[in-house]
Image 1 (cartoon, rainbow, N blue to C red):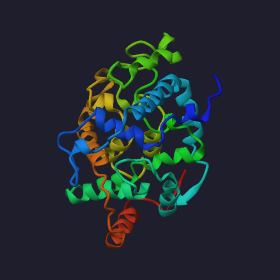
Image 2 (cartoon, rainbow, N blue to C red):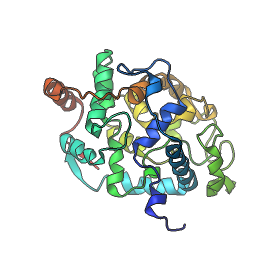
Image 3 (tube, rainbow, N blue to C red):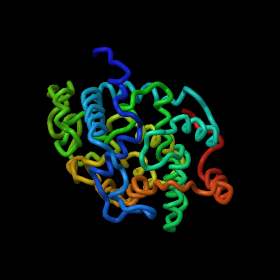
Amino acid sequence: MKELKDSEINPLASLDNWEDDVLTRYPDPESIATTRSTEEYRQYDDPARDTVREFYKLNHTYQTYEFVQEKRKDFLAFSREEKTIWEAFDFLNQLVDDSDPDTDLDQFQHLLQTSEAIRADGHPDWMVLTGLMHDMGKVLCLFGEPQWAVVGDTFPVGCAFSDKIVYSEFFALNPDSNNPKYNTKLGIYEEGCGLRNVTMSWGHDEYVYQMMKDYLPEPALYMLRYHSFYSWHREGEYGYLLDDHDREMLKWVKLFNPYDLYSKSPVAPNWEEIKGYYHELIAKYLPEKLKF
């Protein structure tokens, strides 16, 4: 594999450029947005779109089955650091995004806006906590991971890539596309095997799922693990890998997605008014410290 320049490793100006592009590609007519119309979100000039294309070129070239297995072995040992939940949020806030056109708030404020939107609609408290934790996996960037291995639409590896995945033409550069073990419809899987038996591309979704899998209920875990799997929950692809449990859980993933995409607002939640609720919520479900 050739050595990449920093601009090639991280072609996006910010992590949130991918999320901004997602809303353009997958608009939701029943938005959670309250201060602006959905059309006012995610506004970028054409050059930014070029960076998104370059991002996906890297993502689709290097997200091979072997690459994912290496990352899982490395990061899912959770042997790097141990932090309290609040220390973890401070850590995540090192990823403040100054170029996001939708908000100049830090990562924690975005997570609070997501969770507060969920809470305002009367959903269960575990779903509120899911909103608060859903982007915690982006700390991977602080461990030296390139953007294309942290964010981006996720997809199964180990079988043929769907042409409904964004910028699917770039999979022609992926070695797995020429590997007969991986380039058939089912690849290494069996029909109806269930997503729990399918290896997904590497990124913050899988990382935070693995971090939270012992603490949250099943619908929450599906929200965390598959919220970037747009070719499934928006395009209806990979039905041949699903089992009945996946089909039942799909409604939860669909329910969560708009809260993530449309909850940004220039007004930060009043932390002094709500911190008691969140301290109690975290103590109810999570241990004092998390491993990273």
